[in-house]
Length: 420
Length: 105
Image (cartoon, rainbow over all chains, first blue to last red; front, side):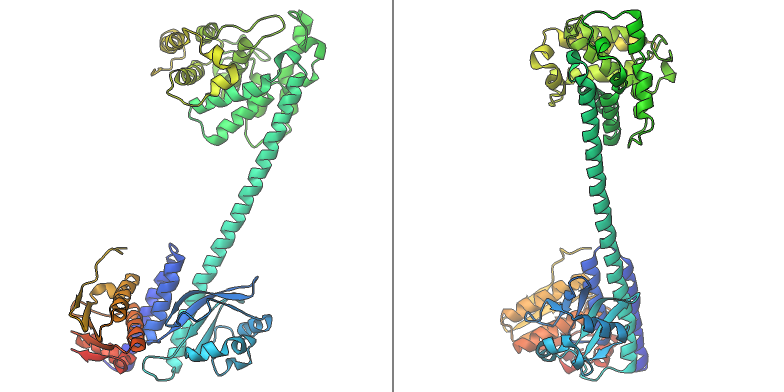
């Protein structure tokens, strides 16, 4: 085979390998190192390096180098005038003899000459300098031919594209990270606002201080027990925090009445779900169904709830969760006309009303979470923090919970097999 | 990519023989270069790179061998490429590697 033909085959095979290498985005460092091997090996160039250009710092940083020695600078400053010269040169190699007018060359002349750098190849992609390839002498000692230069240009173009792609990827990741941080900050602001609202709602009622926050927390526990995603859990917690927002428009004297309110007052109070819905509806919540939870948290499965008397499948699921959390908190806190009830009584109430007032699977999730905490299966102290240790550790609560969970299947029309 | 392979080496004092095998043609071939440098730094007078299990040498292989040549030349170590196939020999000649090494076919 004629030598020239063999040489071309060797170089083209390197070019093909390089194309494949650049397309493989798994490991940028390996890609650059392999690219340098392929470029040097295609023409048997003794030494060389690939540097990435940073437009912001106006500097070159070496990504890979071979045969340049430890004294070769790992980064090098580039003047703006040099950058312009490189851009003017386009994807054309600059002979070291032609590079002498560059400030860059004057600055690094000694080391470039000592390392026998013969060619400087700017890597230009979309009119942007992304890097530079430095190439030393050929092993043959012969000067670079026109064909050699064609091969160098073709391979450098691939390397330039590889660096450009990497730059785009890094920029994309940076922007995604920025957006993520912005989103987190907005979520935090939203969450703070929701909590502030919950406190504002609760401050209207001196007897039920902290009620909205606790309903938010109980709703969160239920969603966790149901295996919902973090975002869904956050959404249901928000729904819990805001479920009573409509109470902001109810007369304080009705909310704080130290007696059982009359029918007229009760009718006024019972408007709060619909008013809450009207307040929450125009707000663009990051989670859906928050206004629905406010509107329907007093509905019951048997249709005896308010405001619309919906039945089981008509009630949004989130409202079913908040309904249980709301009732549970009402039963486990002192009210002006009623003392808090014993834990086992409350559990018994939940069990008895599963299928009529509460969704059985939600009762199961709630009681299951409580049982797991009491038996030590779940180390989090979610219930103890909200109810107090003494209240939670009432004798006999564990068997009552187990009984409630086992009975759920038999007594409830909406079956849910408990596995405790 | 297997990076845990062992480089076969024979060292009888002044002469060290490193077997290139087919690993030479991949980025993992840098391990062969490191082994050659280790033998050179260890003071061997002659470094033999054996190509008996190397079917072809691609551009990565050439680049790695240039690194070995550079290291040997800096240390004043004689370098021999042995058991080189005819095609590979032609390639080395064409690229000018034979200016720097002795070839034992």
